[in-house]
Length: 332
Image: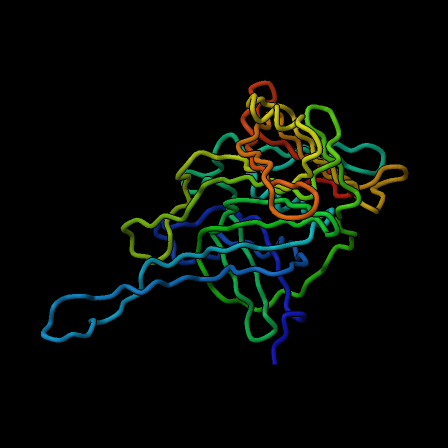
């Protein structure tokens, strides 16, 4: 009997985006030579084949034949935040390589979302995903892209990373034996949050999500798979969380609809080099509340759920920047 514990999972940047341009050999596009095996919590990525029903009137009450509809790959991959693996996920979803600088024996990687699409047919960096479920061949999904990435931290838990993917194409190959990188995960008691330079000690959980708003698109070509992955709306950064209502300071900022810098910093338990711990810092240079309602919900301390956006900041040239310190030399 197959067991999830004996499976493995990996992602890789593709050599290029395939789509449909007359080639019939997908191995010129997908890339298994540089797979990054990662430890996951779960995922629901799979191939969807919606039915196409024939509904002509033919002297009977029953529906007609069923044909295959447009095929596509979609789903969400869930991780605990690993100090090395997280850099790959950010790079995949942001659509750009990191700017990496070495200091002593550690590296500082700076990520910002892409400002130009990396491919005419793909609005983000094309990816290959390998998934082996402990029986038979491994599933290989290719010509997919990171459509969103979400980083969440709640008190009493590990930091969570959820990456949504869209695409793509599908085949099966022999399993590729995994090699994993050791690392201790980021967790809640190593986290600090500041807004406009002032520490906020009342936030109980927070989620920051970059939406690329890309989707797989089909065109009239001799293939049931998508021919491109394109943007269908403007990119945005969503924020939501839960906070104790102890004063009116943040309520006043909501009422004034001010835009201020929000910085979320996670410090890992392991050192990247002597005296320097692994760290992850998320900066929203112009954070703005969209909802902030102190309402009674029953006995106990007053808490409220808030939402907001990270807005594009012309001075920083971005709506979000992530800085990662660890022992990896580069994220290409």
